[in-house]
Image (tube, rainbow, N blue to C red; front, side, top):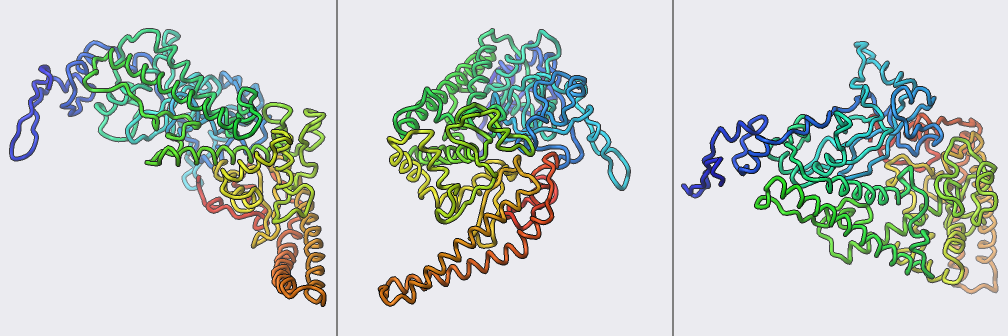
Amino acid sequence: MSENQRCSREQGMGRNFFRASAEGFKKIPGSPISYWAPDSVIRAFEHGNFLNDLVHARIALATGDNGEFIRCWSEVSFEGIGFGIKSNSDSVRSGCKWFPCNKGGDFRKWFGNNEFIINWLNDGEAVKSISDPETGRIRSHNYNGDFGFQESLSWSALSSSKLGIRYSAQGSMFVTPGSSAFRKSEKTNLYVVLSLLSSKVADYFLRLISATMNIEVGNILRIPVLECGKETDQAAKSAIALAKFDWDSYEISWDFTSLPLLYPDHRQPTLKASYQKLRAHWREVTLDMQRLEEENNRIFIDAYGLQEELSPDVPLNEITLTCNPHYRYGGDKSEEELEALLLADTMRELVSYAVGCMFGRYSLDKPGLILANQGETLADYLRQVPQPRFPADDDNVIPLLDGDWFPDDITLRFRQFLRVAFGDEHYEDNLAFIEKALGKDVRKYFLKDFYADHVKRYKKRPIYWLFSSPKGTFSALVYLHRYRPDTVSVVLKYLRDFRDKLAARLGHLQQVAINPSASQGDKTKANKQVDVIKKQLLELDDYERDILHPLATEQVELDLDKGVKHNYLELGSALKKIVGLDAKGED
């Protein structure tokens, strides 16, 4: 060990022992028992500044009831969200109710986890007035103060061993369990701070300073800072750009514009070739990020003299890009397994985008959100997209059935989307490519998996809602933002039309069963189907009588501001049950 520590390793009774100078520990803030710290670390604490000299770090706002005041951004009307706000006074002047907020989230570096919004109407009037019903004490605290909406670095409260620091431009509040850091003066370069905190050196110092997994604000401020050159500024900016491009490539981002498979740079004659080109691009992006992170590590390792303690290498599973399957799926999966998972998820994302185009949330003819506000209609869509190549559904109800019972059935509409988006010439090959990736045909995917995937993608706050009879004989999707009080009546009309068609099918099968010229095999098959359809008709009758018709007469109104968790339960058992949605507190 180092001379400064006067630490030596001795063998005794089968165990290792260390001797270290107590004077060395005193130079480390808090004097933790870090007997393994080399001379270069002691010198960094002796001669360097500390992050506390450069940034303020603050514990986030505690609302007292996140379920009441926090939403996923996709739950509410998009026009009611205030983006790009620079101060509390600006937020008041905007008249908006909802504003972006950083709330920690999954381990991710550089940029991302921009999923949540907070009700900060009139400078958080409702948040600041929430009180305990028994004691009368205000439950919320830490209101962000002058730091609200300022440029910052944010991170999650807990990590097993590594920091996931992300850049946040002006415009966001910060909410527990996340925390944030802000520059102390205009001289502070947040990009350089981000580079340091995203390096292995920062993780090393945190392990030295803190004995727990909890990333406490005070511990981060105790990291020593040495001069490392301006290249770290550019490294951070490049990494942020790559991470933001990756985050915005998925519809969970409010800056999502279109499906990457549809970008002109990736388009090829077939969907398979387009995916292969996109996959090659993703590999390149992942390797670019890996090179950036390793070079960033090397700069700080050299500056802090930690060459014998740390390697600059970063394994692929620590490159936190969604397009990187090594990070996205992790574990000990083979390359073949990772590629299969990524392909399947990319096809699921294609299907999800197609459904968004069916409802008018997106359009093949215009980037970004189209219909994303409460009560918007087809007329609103046509004002933005006058001559769509693939038009939005006219009545906001898309049947999801085991058969082509309606011309706007979801499977038929998806096939139409595929033809429009990727052309007729290779339609059959494109459909086969999708179905092979999904492991089943498209209709089975819609019937068995689509809604579960959608609920998972939107973290149990779905924006497409599935009306479903108890055993799923009848089901239909509606888009929450286009919901109106008469929407259930439209669903009811589809149900009745479907029941009439099913009854007609029953009559036909009964004729086959008694037709003397029919073969015995056809008669047997018809009789089996007759029994199935009779049970289905009884199911539909019960669903209409007990659930759908009473609900339709109520003309239920929804308020998007109340959130999916509240509104979904307003329609009760008419909708497919989402496990855990009715639980108290946050999911």
